[in-house]
Length: 152
Length: 403
Image 1 (tube, rainbow over the protein chains, first blue to last red):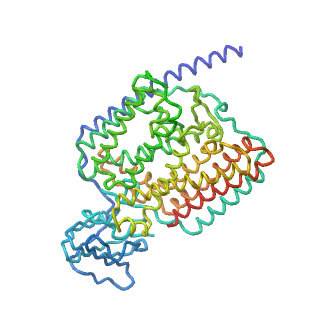
Image 2: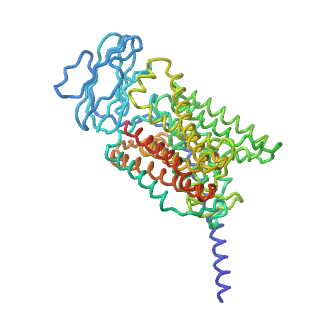
Image 3: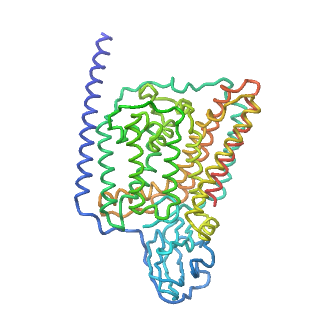
């Protein structure tokens, strides 16, 4: 009695295993088909980034006292003051003023803020630090890290 | 798109962990080490490759590998024809593949062996794999990938990734044609990476090919020493350590003070050499105290959990946030990335817990190996350098999270 039961159970297991193998093969094919479809379909052009409202002003900034602010100049590939950290409390405003001696593009990572930097003219970006983490502020052409905004 | 800092891709890096977490982690590591020294067993317990309960599963390897091949071709198509902004390929490679292999292997064992598209090639070796080669090809491959991810001027540029893929594919193809599938076990950097981490999984693959359920410590014990194993683990540890250094302002200043790529290369190599020197010095000391020779390759397995802990600590938030972006971009979904999917508190907890857990597992694995290899009277004293080594790695890892 016991032996037949075990045999039955074994048979059952074998059938189930074969079924599982078949099912997983079908699943694999389905995923492959989906991937192909996705590849052929239109590529997403509306690529959202978690950017918050910000504004870009040409000219120096007049930040309120006590507000997170960095003033950075780039001369012949040198960043002054040397790249450090700009500590910001979550939800508070940040102002960064950059003056570059060559035309370049400024990029605040994570907040996805981009601003053109005309040669020799100060450009100010203002935004609210809504995301926590450490975000690099870089120039795209010269590939310089200007500072890192640490939001906590 | 161009992430100059860390990880190849990614828009944010983690905040330094609160000082309290760091002290708690370091203290826990210290206490566990000394408790282990005094309280753990005096006779070896782990049975390595003999352990485990066979599982009645046979994963459908060929369909899975065809699927990986399709995913690979899809990624290459993105690299060749995708847009410069919002290209999915760097996210697929650096996040889903490279980082995703860590949790997948930690849970399911050597997954890249199962998925490796190069295993679709026929296994017809023309020559036996020279034993002297060992893990050296994998160490070199992992170094190349880490260099591309952390040091290369444009880690996310399609040209960079295509060059790497062509080089990687060419080497694997040549290796398989000459040495058969045996090459992949030692020469494919990603298979070695996944298999080494997979030794920590509850599901393992024994040398006889059986899938077994086993104690992860038995799995760890089953890592066979071979030439280049120490180097491979040191590349993983040193590379992740360098990754932690790359957001430190002082290091950024150094990089921007001269030729950045050359200085970055030197920094990466220095981090790996430092990890390796520390290991060699501590093992030499353990050998002197324990009066036993040839210990160096036989403790490399105890560094695998330490490396896995570092990897989890450094990549957890990247996988949680940029992993979403990888899926969204690859499938063209109209969804936003939830950049706050994990809070800073959760990230800090996972980071410290991963490093301390890796430390504890490393200490236990090293303890079992010492009581097997060292004469009983010297087993306790001989372990002291090993504990010092683990503590150095752990405190180093925690300090990098503080920086």
